[in-house]
Length: 294
Image (cartoon, rainbow, N blue to C red; front, side, top):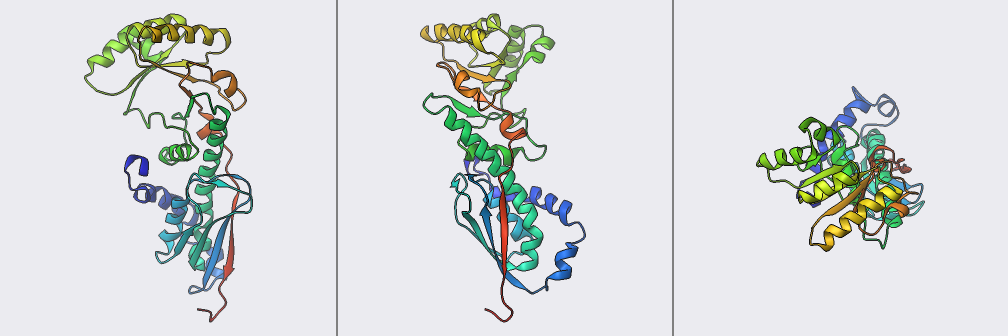
């Protein structure tokens, strides 16, 4: 993935291979029965509805895994806006490979484009407020890297990838440690140098976290007057020189974004981007090459 310096094709190849094993198993019996082994053809991937594209390179990996000589020509780049009826990619190669890889390629492409589309709508809903839309760890098991990539293609920003790249002290950690102060003390005593965010349960914990100079506060399910009071406390601390960011989470919907994206809020996290987004509808249309054609 370009954002992390990762070889994207290499990172997604095991996921694509697993999906092909699931779908093909011992063989594509219908295609093998109806299509000659050497038959060549051309196919177009077309968007059936408007949205945002994500996952094109993964689709290419699926086709090329079955035929390394396939020519895959993307007509757009990930992150591009799609119109209904727009051509997304053109594929040339063995017809058997194209037909066998079709569903796996479209499943990845549709799923990720759906996430990118939902993210773009959320980003547009808070445009001009300075608030950034971020994701959560509520992802499909095994597909987190891809789904968070799709969020980035939609204009969102990624929260932590897993439990290893950021401290996030939540209510259960506080309960286990005995207090928010003790939980933060233990984090800092660990000697691990990572960003720290704490979940606050009410205004008193907001003040406690600020007194501990925590750099990022998570307000989960804060709404209305409770959110106003918490943001007022943060605003006062910022006027005094505190450098602190605020994230809002908890049952956030596209409709509720304008009410939550208030001055003083830096991030709004939406689990629905990855756990509930509807896949974008794309299709593959094949044109077999006439026998004897070159």
